Length: 128
Image (cartoon, rainbow, N blue to C red; front, top):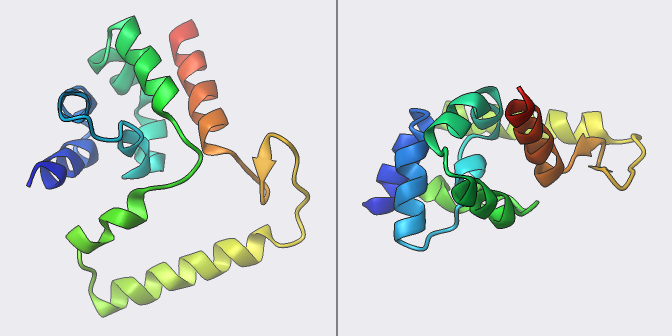
């Protein structure tokens, strides 16, 4: 029940409340990003505003990991067959698009590592 609440809050971009629950119950703060990475990056200003304490932002950055934990939450949100087919197709196309690209220390499979992308976006927001 708690995890479903946290996921719902994250999807609603209520990052402050979600952060508080994750921290209070010693859950992986990395979930703030993993539930919906694109939504998080698009609303990073809202995240910074809602989680305003510097110590909390430091805790968030220190909790980031490149691995994604969102797949562990898939059981909570069963998909229709059509959604599963679409998801498999998107994964296939992403894998196909990544083939042939070179990797660097800042990227994996042509994509920037999650921690680097989040930290860059967070730094840009804080510099504003």
